Image (cartoon, rainbow, N blue to C red; front, side, top):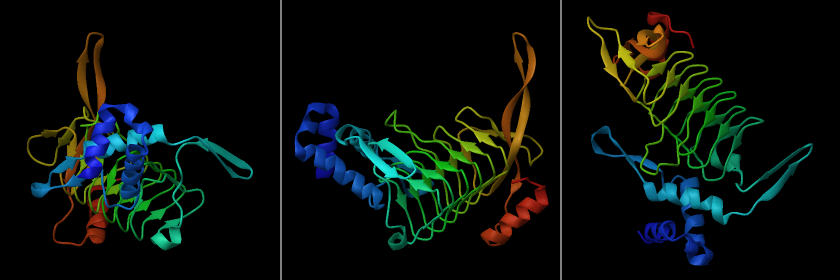
Length: 271
């Protein structure tokens, strides 16, 4: 509570950051986020999520209190304010060259980072695979035993403060080249086939029943999703607009791994 009060006071009066009491509070919050003891969004009762705006405020102010620094790894050179994570062995994280995670991102044990990028404020829970050239944006929340396939783009969000980050819940499989941005939530054990793009305005249409059911900003649990399109009228004529189609559900009767294989085989989803 004391940390929160200091952060909120400094956010409302930035001159306070010149005082080490407040700048150290910002740094302490980032340390807590880095270790997973604080999160920018947390699950609450009823399956909902709560955004911690003050934690996002601390992340934004961290850019102000940090000094630029040169990092040299011959023949490469970098110039930035953010430190990088280290001590992967002690963390129990496998990091394959050239995986990059910024300090202030939490990586749980048994996370695997192929050549990929994880930004400050992100939270990646245990057993998750971040595959080659996948990116996890600032404050994104990734659950346990998630697979982010090659080239996946998980969007970040710092402002507006009340905006929810992208949330990928436990057991999800996100197929190659998928893009999930603008605080979209993918519920537990859902499967996104290759090239699915989800924004807050993307229509997510369940076509598995007799009549279509439309969602926006949320993929229901265990849904199997593929790219689709629908016809929309414009002044210049009718054109196909991208959407996402829910074509079925993963089976509750099987474990996650078997259920994933069933989903891919039963619905012929490309990954």
